[in-house]
Figure 1 (spheres, rainbow, N blue to C red):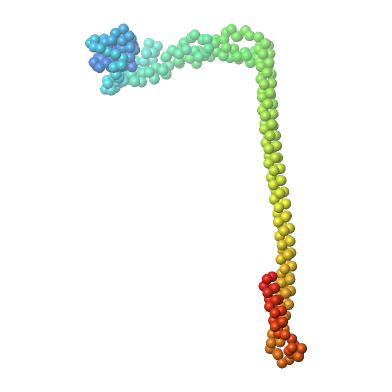
Figure 2: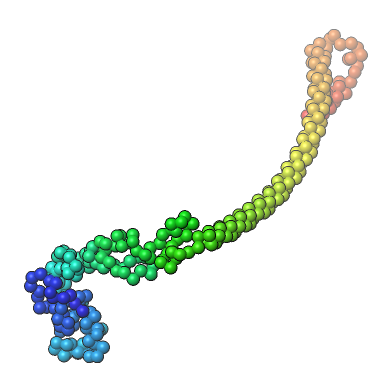
Length: 287
């Protein structure tokens, strides 16, 4: 169904009127023959017919198309009264804005939000109705804390309700304590496993460090033994060096002063002394 013609202000073009309901187009579509219809109207028509209601040409849902843009623009610019005009709303707005206005209109009837309340009131009076609605939710005036949901709850037993509430609280507290206990136990178990694993890794690292320390001690002892041996060899070489130098000094003295030598020195075989010097030199080189 379309928009009631009596709601519109001013002239409405014939092309913007539905060919079936004869009201202004609502959610319009267009046939290939250029006749326009409300979507709901043409769908209902094509259930029993297969032709255009105006010129009887073949028509099917698959060949319906949206309204031409210029026609849609003309349609959206039409001015009309709010549907709540009879209740006192005096708003006149364009067709493209009417839905958003009526959704927020203060004169629109809306249902009471309280569960079970059958009353519908104007939006502007909704708050006042909710304050006095017998289906509104409120706490017991006697102070027991019970939430009254409707007239049938007004004559409740406060002692029984408080006892029930206490049992619920106790049960909830027990459940929370049990959940907390399980969570704490789970955390403790997880930390215990982590500590055991960490201890095992630390013990392994300690054993490895001990092994490395033992190897280092062995290497240090070997180095110290090698150093002592080298020191002894150096001392021996230094001793032999001094002896060789002393021998070379004596040899030079004998060479530069041959006339001062004794007869025993003259008859001593020079080759033997030279061989002795060569032997000392070879030993020093070998060291």
